[in-house]
Image 1 (spheres, one colour):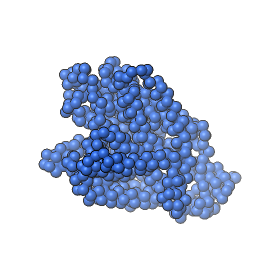
Image 2 (tube, helix red, strand yellow):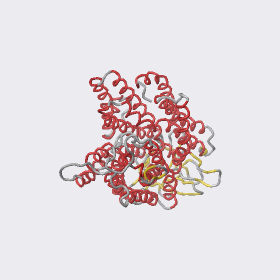
Image 3 (tube, rainbow, N blue to C red):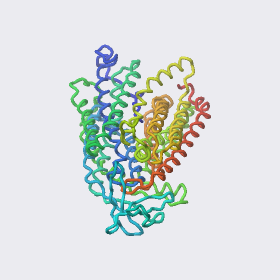
Image 4 (tube, rainbow, N blue to C red):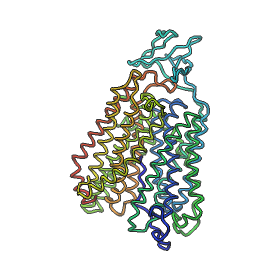
Length: 597
């Protein structure tokens, strides 16, 4: 989970306040940490609960094809990690962290509540050689079968390995065969409810921009400069992130399956409301923390809130533009691909590709040789960071669809979990492994054997690749139903969680240590921009793994399994290869870091 708090760049507390160390404590920390811990836990409960449902909601309720659903998911998560750049700046300059957190929490809660209103499930249909047919869904023994209605006849839809589609009569005989590309599946969906859904995503994107960076800033304000409890405090705070996501990724999908989509999103909204309540009604416990800067003139908070809400239509436009994007023509090359990108993709890639070399050129002009080399090292690691999170973030898109289609979700034959609930494995393994990894790094450090930052990045990349290769290996043991045991997917998340702990906790710290002092804030922005780009590219990668569906259901699970195995094999090898390459050049990067650990 890309939720490492910004421990290294907090605003300093007001020195007129009482030293927190002299007050009553919570596990040896300022008591206010307990409230901020719980606030973050409930916010992450809402965010990850909603995220666990989103791709499935898009493919099963709105019956979007895989390309549209995974592209929209990637665009949403990209904006979620881009907006904190603006929200953090506005809090620093005008609002103060506490007001920004309150505003962000209430906007996100409203966004989750709006998602509860999805209307009726879209009605699937098929177009065969230019003629439209109604598609009906029949459920037997927990399995769904799709039929086209041709007059008085109902013909079962069966996808074939070669891309053709067979239409079977009641006896199972082939009544008609449709050539590859002649069968097109779509659905009648309400434009109004699609608009409502996109407005909700826009609200969550904007609200998160105000909440995410500023709750961490408030934690930093609990500690005075030089207080050695600060890193430990952020470690406790980070546990709130994972505890919240752990429980929500079990409960929200459960309610969505048992009651309806609205119940899953409603629980996420309630979690977000709990978070807002804790910060809004703090009983004076947070007085003096996260306060707005002292400025002459009229308070601009109301104007900022209005302008933020006015950006909802802008985000809505970006989402609709993303959904309308078409694939680049075959043979069009790099320029053709870039030209075919939606506006969001052009903005993200353009900003990243300009800022990285631009900052390096500036560093060469204003810094000495040592500073320039440290900046080059930072930029190299930022680029590798994009690769890692691009592949790691398949969890919410292609891996969730793989869980839904090609995974036996039975737990020891006793009960089954849903596809959305499989995302809880990551949070569980992070909670279980974090203390172990902390002890490991400490032990190695005492012996002078702790890996350098570039080596940890390289190990993380190899790990994320090995996770996909492990799942592909499991695919060789799929049963006659073309489904793998859930433990293969759990194994992937175990390996990925280990990889995450090798890269996530050190990234922000690395940026603050390697950056030229005058542009630490800008470099922090580039770091978050790299994660935002990775989220977008993750959606593009998931689109490559798209499988043809009818009414949101795959009609040939063998084709589905082969498609996922092919894509996961390719990205697994690429990631591992890039990780090995980083290990090979890590001595050079270490030299350019000039002793930074």
